[in-house]
Amino acid sequence: MGRGKIAIRRIDNSTSRQVTFSKRRNGLLKKARELSILCDAEVGLIIFSSTGKLYDYASSSMKRVIERYNKLKEEHHQLLNPASEVKFWQKEAASLRQQLQHLQECHRQLMGEELSGLSVRDLQNLENQLEMSLKGVRIKKDQILTDKIKELNHKGHLIHQENLELYKKIDIIHQENTELQKKVYGTREAIESSRSSYSNCTFNDGYDLHAPVHLQLSHPQPPKTDTLAKSMKLG
Image 1 (tube, rainbow, N blue to C red):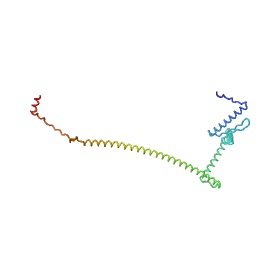
Image 2: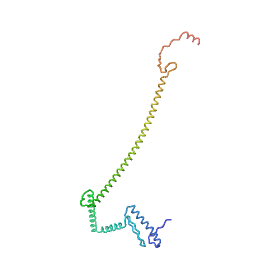
Image 3: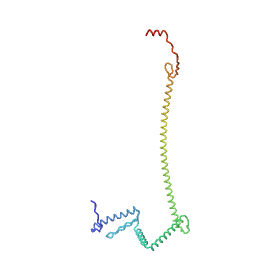
Image 4: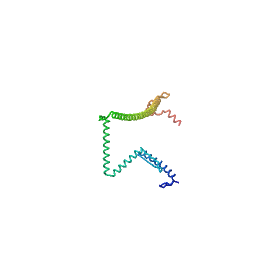
């Protein structure tokens, strides 16, 4: 059985009310912390219990959250009035111009310009800032070069492995070609040796097997009378 819905109204039992407050307070504080971490939000939470105890949570600091809240609330009220809105934007423009002027001055000083109005302490701070900036640039440069060297070494290792594989394949192909040549030339030599032995063999009676035979045609000779007479007697 699922838990039934709880009616949203004041709990009469003080013990149940305190238990519910503790559970929901802890859940609310947990959700506020998760919201600030997951969403990079600036969260401020203030809880007063029925007994007057204070429970709060702030992602940065409660004072900063409250000041930011009051400032934005005041700006919101000023934007509702047209005259106040004009003054607000004029104030914002003047603040932005002042910030731009300060940044330009700092940039010129970092470039080594307009240093006459600076004291020894200001020049020392500027020197330290430049050294820190130069150190950071060198560290970044060394990191990039190191990563590039590692990448090139990795590529070189892969190319070396590919070359070894190709050398192995070439060696295998060379061995196969050698075996084929042995088979081809070995068969040819066997055929040639059998032919030479066959051509050199002769009959035992002195006649050469491959000696040319000369045939001649001649007229038939008439049978002799004695032979004819004997044949007639026998017949």
